[in-house]
Image 1 (cartoon, rainbow, N blue to C red):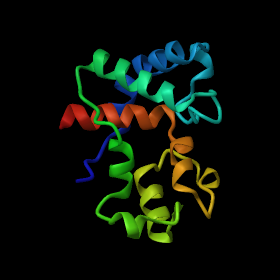
Image 2: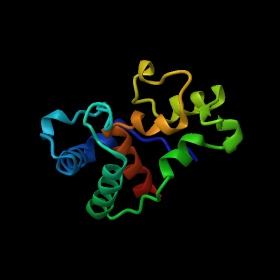
Image 3: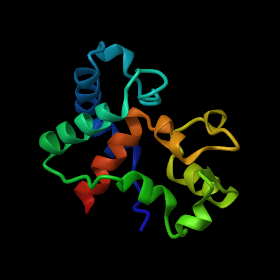
Length: 136
């Protein structure tokens, strides 16, 4: 299931994704970096994620299913294997690190509450979502 995504594929769409993120969040485009956490660095809220995904779908003519990123981050792990009591398991943490290699390791806290996973999503994470859907 994990389709390899090249840096070139990310770089090809990054300018449009950064523009969409900046526009949706009302910030300057130069504040948006590939490794910017949308929540921690750019003050996005979960409603902004929906707006950004909607705009990406329009711009790139793809469909990004809701919850897709969480589902992909979990991979083949069952929900119980991935998280217990709202906290991501060690196996789950390993999956997240594999799924989000663009996120600096020090940002992935242990223990990590599953509700905090969206805080890890960066501009590059959204680029990868688009590329994955384009490859479909």
